Length: 621
Image 1: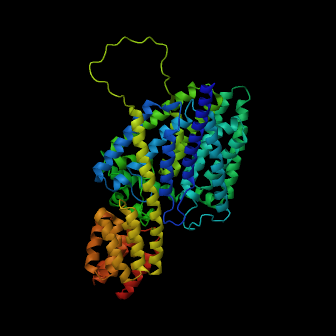
Image 2 (image 1 turned 90 degrees about the vertical axis):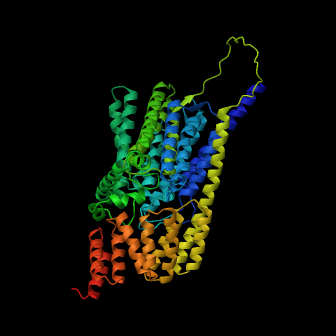
Image 3 (image 1 turned 180 degrees about the horizontal axis):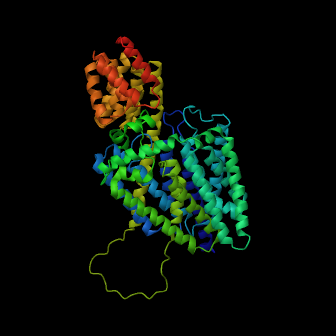
């Protein structure tokens, strides 16, 4: 009886530990720094690290399948190799603004696989799985409420009207991905068992996906609904199964269509093709970059600096170069850019392993509830992969998909053999050694790394506060205070090369309006940025603006000559080049450069105004 009582208490403790882990991981969808400049990345990384650590110490009856473990190890090795070849332990290793997807972050993404296998995989405690699905339903309901409020004009997050609403995730498509993958997990259970929690969660996830306005998310949602209902109809059998399938399709598609029509922004995006052609242009420029760096890529985080040299004039005219892309928005191209062929092959192997083991687990299980959950997990993983054909992963969107991939890849732990006859052994001639449990040693090492990552992420998150305060001080003209705030941020993130870049851009914005003092600070911070990252077109432009505002015309011309080589179709580089040439007294060259800037932007109103002013000053009609 004592043994039974101990087992019961141990089981309860395991469930509670798993619940804490899953709660921390789901908190990644909501946590942010309210007073930060970019509020979203580092708080989510901190919660991700803590949640993973708790999940790794939770007792479990399942583990990650060997094939998936090998694939995850290969991905991390290929990614680490790419960062080492790029700049050793520099910015590629730690990650770049705004998602900071360096080795620590990618390793955390991959750790979602063993945690998902341990907590949610085949044979895992049903109480843990039930807790997570209900937690997921509640999370989707909160996001749906925020999305509906934004659709009605109530901006609950205080975001600028310039950007599409992304709730606590910062990006509208990220919001849609969370809704899509969450709905995918719950939809099979909602249709088959019709439990209120699952029905409400699936409905809320669909609302979030539609309200995001992402075409890719909405299209994949439609594919998901058709696939899940078709699979369930095939499983049920009987002569009326397809009639029921049609009814379910009507019941699920009709609210989605009504929601699309009810949201003007969503309807407008579905009827326009601007971003579609922009994606094609971006992929073309990315492929040109890859062809020159096929074997090992350019390194993680270096896409934003390497791409401008491969952009075409058509790209500049249709898409524009004011907001540099930091991702190819197609996951296979991102793998090739970051780590070349080795990273692409490693990720392909990992994806194939997850799908193969997952399909095998779905076929093998005889528990209806477990099968429905695994089918939902498969739908979430496939939906995530399809959306990444036009988007990029990040911390919040990866949590649900990563846990589901781990659940699909789980296998039961081998029970220790009993009742076998002991083999006769001869006495050892050497001194006995204490056996070391290598698995436990490795787990403790990983826990130590996760603890350090969580602490570093919290420090990095606090740096967002002085970054925002510094930007506000620049706008108010308190330049010394602004520089002090940026110094504080740099002290909290000494490994982050982009703190200096952001500071230089902030001062350059004021310097462009003709403030010499801001120009001096722009020169100081942009030069710091270029010391760590010499190829940054953004820092070269900020440096030139600062030099021009502070009277260093010759220095500005030289800096912009470098920028034109690095970004031959960047309209801002050509515009600033024209202003620098005009300040140097070379009017004809200045007019030619500004005319070039006019021809390289989809909205040349500002450039045309400056061109007209220069022509008038030069006495030209």
